[in-house]
Structures are given as structure tokens and as C-alpha cells.
Image (cartoon, rainbow over all chains, first blue to last red):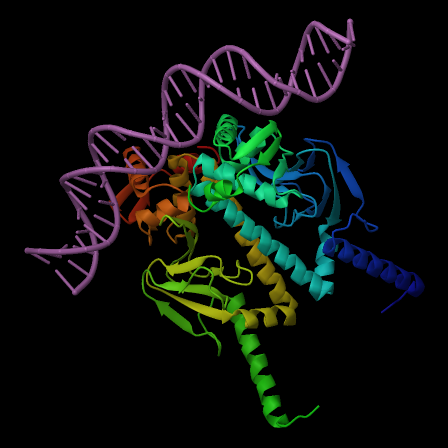
Length: 233
Length: 233
DNA sequence: CGGGATTTTGATTCCAATCAAGTCCGGTGG
DNA sequence: CCACCGGACTTGATTGGAATCAAAATCCCG
């Protein structure tokens, strides 16, 4: 075997290893610190991170803001599969290519990792492989929870469960600032925007929530909300 | 460190390694051949393989028959997440414990692998780890497809898409023998059994399918079915 | 042959979609 | 500064599709 540039080769290996370690750190921890190959990128509200069927499948971590993954139907309607908040990892749900699109719900920043990098990382380091696998299983669990929501619940149950989700993520569990429009919520829950709006109003009339502004929700009756959002409708 | 039984230890290691290799083979290939720790088990129709919240999470492969994974709601209703046919792997969707229940739709045989064994296997052999990861991603993709079905489709669209799924799995793509009841189908699609029945009748009247018996469906108009089962309703 | 489970069919009700105006901001430019 | 504009949201009237309630028909298995 010829080794034309042994020194060069050694340097590259070392650089490669450092890149891997950087990426590993970034994946594992809630850090915006980006490695050589993964700068933090800003996207304006509504901008597309990647489209349906895009090659070059990358893995993303949300640093700030909210991202939605969705699919468009031929009649113009849309199904939103998930909202990804800061800290969430997404994009690896898609095998060879992205079967979903990802878009910024509001202004947001994300870091991205080349799929190749992630694969190299996983085969390199068992702990990271395990971590990635657990992310995948979490996504799967979420998708199943979502299916339950879509299949067996009334509009009231859907909205209540959705608000529960949002409240859990919020720092103040009694105050939710929605990043998304009524249409987004409707497309996530399999409803129309009118029904979403009406249901918010209904919850307000029942004194379960207050709506200081359209996008800000104060939960005034937690047990009441939980009861509606629990399993059945 | 004391080694009281060195010979015994060596034999155990060898046996352990053989078990791992057997399990690897069984996971990777469509084989009912079971390894030392994974006998093929028969379950009668309706029998429970494992319940919601069961500890001892195992991974299963269906050898013959059909298995459903589902959850029960407090009001007695049910959401079926998936039907698993022969060759399918399931059960690893659940992290530490099973959040779903699994039941035999009809008489069936499955092989099961202890979760510990699977984990050992994965950390032992990279190819197997990759394989398991790809199974997880496939499950995720299916769950998302299912969510789309539940969220944005009429009863007609749901049933058509469901029949498409079943036909694809069938050896004769024009003839589907359903293992499941109307109630099962309803719980999978988020409908009632009456609506499922009515929709079958409607498809028959449109001459898209024929129903020699309630459980046997002959597809007489493939393009027609595909059109209804395609994206929108 | 029963007899229970499964399936089909019918009548009615009800929830959410659709169609249709309004209202409420938040930003922009005169 | 304010008037205006457009997008987001709310509200109302009506329709429609699936759920629910109810009963018959059919199948399958002992």
C-alpha cells in the first residue's frame, strides 16, 4: 500500500476526530455551540428548512424558536406532525430522504449536522448511537400519542390535550405563549381554524383558560383542563 | 479477583456467544428458527402477548398470523396503532416498558427476544444495531403515515387507504383476506364499526370491490381504489 | 340445528366543516 | 400621529358526514 502523504493524512484524521467530538458534544448537550461543520442558522418565520423529498438529509437541533414538520396534500391542505421547540432534535425521522418538510413557525435558529457526520458518529461511539436510538424511540412515542389524539377525541379533547402539551413545555406552566397560528394548530389536530377558535372561546367561557391576547393563554383551571385533555373526550 | 469456576465460565461465555449469534440470525432473516432463548410461541385469537405498562419489555417477530398493538381508553374505546403481519418486528417501540398492549388478532405464532439480549446484540454487532435502528425509523414512518390517515381523511379515504395497505401485503394483490373484525378496522382508522361496514358496502356499490364473504375482498377496480386512497379524501 | 358473535342496514342526532361576514390588531406609509 | 391595510382571529348560519341508537340478517362453530 502506498502512503504518499503520511503527515497530511495524520493531520486530517486528527481534525476529523475533533469534528466528531464537537458534534457529539453538541448533540448530547443543550448547547448552541456549533462545531466546525454545524453553524447556527437563523430562519425567518415561515421559511423552509427543507422540503418534502429533499435529498441531503440532515439532522437538526432547535436552538431558539419553533419549527414544524409537515406534509402538504394535493388539495392544498396540510398535516403537521410535530412542533419542535428549543432543544428538540428532528430530521432523522426520515430514512434516505426527507419525506416531510420542515418550516420555521416563528423566527428561529437551528444547528444542523450532515447525516454522514451523524452516521460516522454513531458507528464510532456507542453512547452516541444509543442516544440517537433513544431520540428515535421518543419520536415514535410522540407520533403514537399524536395518533391517539387524532383518532379518538373530540375537538374539545384535542385542544385541551394540545394546551397541556404546550403548558408542560412552558417555563411558567400556567402561561402559554403560542408561537403558531390557529391554522397551524388546526393542521396539527386535524380540525379547521374556525373550530380551533370556537373551542378556545368555549374554554374561556367555561373559565378553564383566559385569553389576554389571541396568542397568550393563561390556564385558570388546571384540573379542569387535565380532565378534558385526559384520555377520552 | 477470584475465579472459582474458570472452566464453567468459559463454557458459559461460549454458549452466550452462540445465543447471540442465533438471535442475530433470527432478527435479521425471515426465519421462525428460534434460538436457545427464543422459542416460537402460539397465541390463540384475542390472547394478550403483553399488556399496557408491562415490565419485561421484549421484542417480537411475527411468524404466522396477525398481531395488533393498541391502547385502551378509560371509556372502553380503543386505538389500534398497527397490525403486524408475518415477518414484522415489533415491541421495541416502547422504551423502558410497554406503553402499548399487543394482542393476537387471529391464531398466530411469534418468536420473542429478551430486551437484554437485543441490547447486548446491538452493542456487540454494529450491523445489527444499524438494522434495529432502521426498524425503528420504519415504525416511525408508518406511525406518521397513520397520523396523516387519521387526521385528514374521510371515511371513504381511510377505508380505501387501508385496503391498499392490505392488498400490498397480500400475495395476490387483488384478493385480501382480512384477519380482523370491522371493530378492529374501526379502531385502527378512528371510525365506528357501522361506518366501516357502510363504507365497504358503498365501495361494493361503486364496483370498486367485491365482497364474496365479509372477510374476503376482491379488488375489481385498482385505479379507482388508489384514487380514493391517495392523499386527499 | 341452535345460539352467540359478527355484520349489515335503517332512522335519527349531533359535532365539526363549510360558507360568510365581521372584528381586531400590528405594521406601514402618508 | 393617524388612517389605512392586510393578515389573523372571532362569530354566525347552515350543511353534511359520521356517530349513535336500534333492529335485522348472516355466519360460524359446537
